[in-house]
Image (cartoon, rainbow, N blue to C red; front, side, top):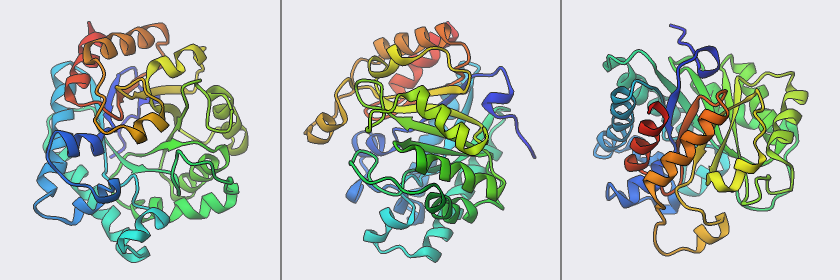
Length: 304
C-alpha cells in the first residue's frame, strides 16, 4: 500500500528523533556507546521501544496531525555497529526486525496518517571533522542498510544528521537504487551551517544538483531553532525541522554532565512560529534533549 508522504499532502507530521536521550533519562534504559539499536533484539526492551513510538502516535492523534515513526537504527550501519560485534548479516536481520516492529505498530492503529521510516545516520560520527566520502562510496555503503529493508512495508528512509554533501548524495542514490523514497536531514552548527561551512540551503541545492532532485525532501535536525532560523528563506525543498531542546552547541552537549531539556513551551512556540512563517515546512519534531512534553507543546502551538 502506497501512503502519501509529507511532500505529497497538506497534512503536517510529527517525528521524534530524541529516542536515545528519552530512553536514557525518561525510560531508565542503558545505552552503551549511545547505541539504541541492540534493543531491537532484546525481547524485554522491545515493548519500551514500541511504547515510545506509540506515545508519538497518541500526541499526533490528539492534535489531528500525522506522524512518522522511525526505526531504532540510526547507528545500525557497518562502521558504527562493528564495535558492538555486529557483522553484515546480523545487521541486515536487525534492520528487518526494527522495520517489522514499527510496521506492526502502524498497522494496529486507526490513525490514517502514520508512516514508518527506516532511520539511518552517517557512516561515522556526525560531529567529527572527517574527510568526505565520495558519492559512489557512500552510495554503496548506505545501500547495504537500505537494501536490507527494501522489500518490507516501510514508507521511506529518514537520513538524519548528515553533515557532508557527498555522503548525503550517495545515500539518496542508494535509496533510489533500492526503490525507497528518502528524506535527507542535515545537521548544522550554531551558525546555521554544516560543519565545513556550507550553508543549509546551499547543501540542499548541491545534493539536488548531484542527484537530479532524487530526494523526496530535506530537513534540518539536531539544532535549536536559534541556530538555523536566521538561515531560512522558504526553500521549497526544505520540508522538515527536528529540533534540539537545548541551545548548547554540539561540543557543549558532549561535555555536559546533565541533560539540558530547555523550555518545552518556549520551544513549541518558536517551532510554530517558523511553521507559520514558512508553511512549506510540514514535518516537525524533537531531537536531543526533547521528550513528549516538548512534542505536546509543538503540536498544540502548531494547530492552535
